[in-house]
Length: 424
Image (cartoon, rainbow, N blue to C red; front, side, top):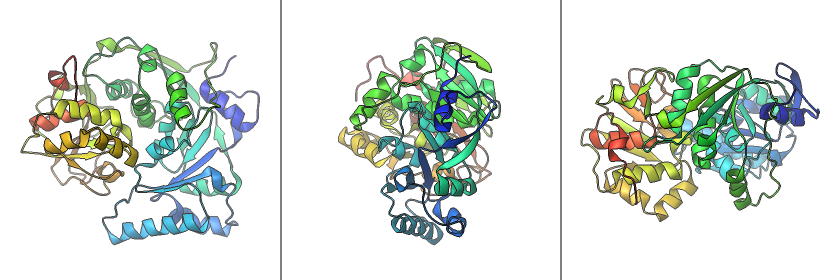
């Protein structure tokens, strides 16, 4: 019996020729990632008590992103603690004010196919878009990883998700993922892997693929994997990586379940309050009034997302009844968007461009919502209290849906703003 990408990656990490789903294995970790909120300030006491020596500083990455910029003294103290800890242990890979950790580790070349990446954040699974087995672990478990470079994992079963066909105009990878989550359910893939394949997936840019892997955890999945190809290889070569492993599932690999879709039949999707699998076509909720739109996060704040929004908002004005916040996924994205004139277009339309951070996505800084407020967001979660008040409501959609909603002040179908040749 052949192996899936997940099984092959964990077999390598375990130093074994093969593993199978359900097997418990000890694995060596390639990258241990922490951020400010669930990193040094939580692990330091236990870490020091057990010896306080990192297994390999080169393999430890710390990113301050949740409390940047600090909105309270408490958040400022967290940032200082994280920065001082990284300095004390002479970490070569410490990043601050660069954006959400998941985007940052991709941009800095820490993510490569076949690597095992563990991080103290559930959306660590985003790295699976490049073919790495990446998943979130608890802060306590991270102590053991930092000390030994090893941990144990149960080899997960894999669900194969096939998306074939031509993706229609006005429909994006976010829509594909929301439809997938609707069918699987918010816990339907618990401790399983989602492996995405099909012609629609292969035709996606890396930006778009990362949306799928990022949101795999919203179906309960351990990670979301996409077979690395020329798109990934080209990206990594630009980072100076020339030894990419094109890891792929065997033809006779065993899947616990397979889902097959025709992308050409899909229309824009919206996740409605208060569950990520409460998904409906945009036409079913069109006209719902909103108070805020939010374009950003590690899910949909990348350059292609900002380009889409700028194409729709160019020459337009956002509704006077709302506020529109834009948060680029990283400092690099911010700079390139600025160079291309995208930020000018968004600002002229009435948007407020904030610095790259986790920001309001997790309800920390820069745009949280109040009681009774409704937001349309391009982020990844919509449960009660996620972006501020538990009395608020969160709808999720693609950057195009967010931009169209910003114009009308109510949930809008982006296809009416999509032209065949959209030029900035």
